[in-house]
Amino acid sequence: MGKNLTIMNKVKLDEVDHQILDILIDNTRVPFTDISKRLFISAGTVHVRVKKMEEAGIIKGSSLNLDYVKLGYSFIAYIGIFLEKTKIINDVIKSLNDIPFVTVAHITTGKFNIFCKVRAHDTKHAKEIIFMIDDIDGVSRTETMISLEESINDKKRLMHRIFNEL
Image (cartoon, rainbow, N blue to C red; front, top):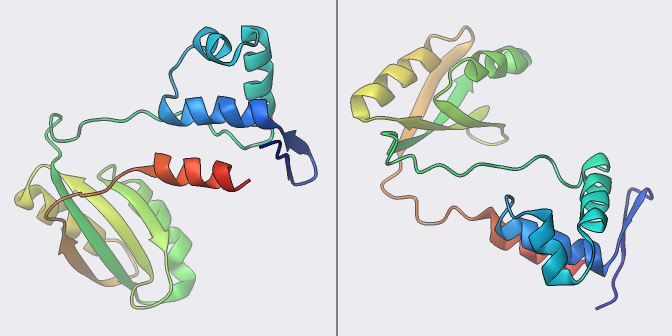
């Protein structure tokens, strides 16, 4: 391939960086020694390159994947939030952040001011969460969609695609 990518004119990614990222995308917990053996480079080189990508903001920590069903949080709902005034949007986002069951919140265009994802134990618990959201100052109303099944939840495919395009 031989492609290089310069991120913000600061960090240049080469083929080795791409290979390291490709491995980490599939498993963020893979030891650097395993990466070094697969790529025939030293573990120190892997460490230095990962640190370089972290400092450049290309790699932002690592994520932990949980089985929410086994943990009792199998109910997923998406809630569109209508605000009384758009200028209070940051205050509402701060209040949503205080509700741990709101796992994602987006400021959006279109029908809703904010669109969020909620995880709950069941419908009763989801109702309590929706009421918490409704009680936030400035929220005029909400519209809820219940997820029947989470069919795709895979950021890895996109990450691989992005790095293959570089």
